[in-house]
Length: 282
Image 1 (spheres, rainbow, N blue to C red):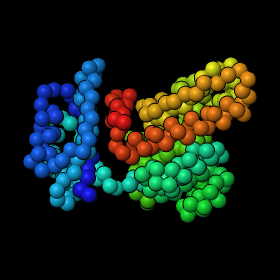
Image 2: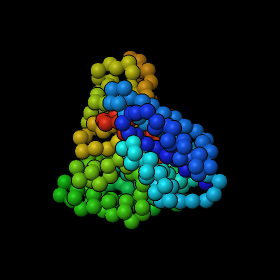
Image 3: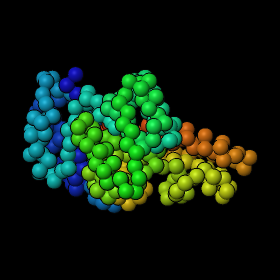
Image 4: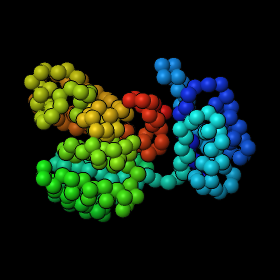
């Protein structure tokens, strides 16, 4: 299968789609799926095209071939091998629901990723990682050792050619340097609609305030805590008779689902940045 995915954004103007499809026609390419969006507020155009070609080629060759079109329209364009699975490193602390969900979805073939390893500042899920035959890296951290621990994480990212880092309820704040090193390739799951109920015991805070709806937010990691571009959100209605433990269970389910969606859309190259927002081609 010579399948590829082209994503691009550029200033909106006449002729973008015509030139992209003309380039594909010259290569005898067949469009499998295409989605586009023009943002009137930012005057930017976004496009995702899944296509195949009759002859084998490489991403580097295609990008070189497309460079003239990209330059003509001042495009930020990327081409991906649609058959290649993204390599993922999962970071987790002591809440394992999101980790367990990602592992099961991947193992069952429902999530098209290759998990290269699991990193944790605790040992709680070493046996879970072993049950999936995955490397488990126990990297404890204190205020005094944070810089060294983060360098170990970055070394793993580089050594294992990681495409995406997933913070699956990793309860440590990343430094600005690590956020910058992972810019655009790190996703976090947050236990609410941002920026509500930050900090510890969020569902106890929600219970104390008598909320009727709880939710979760998946977003890209930036140095501004929990302020990165939002990828996906979801909610569930709750009621006064539910205990904090019951709210926690409902919230855990939402978090797992929202994070899985965000990871899938990222590795399928469906997310394009639009300033501080995202365009998500589902």
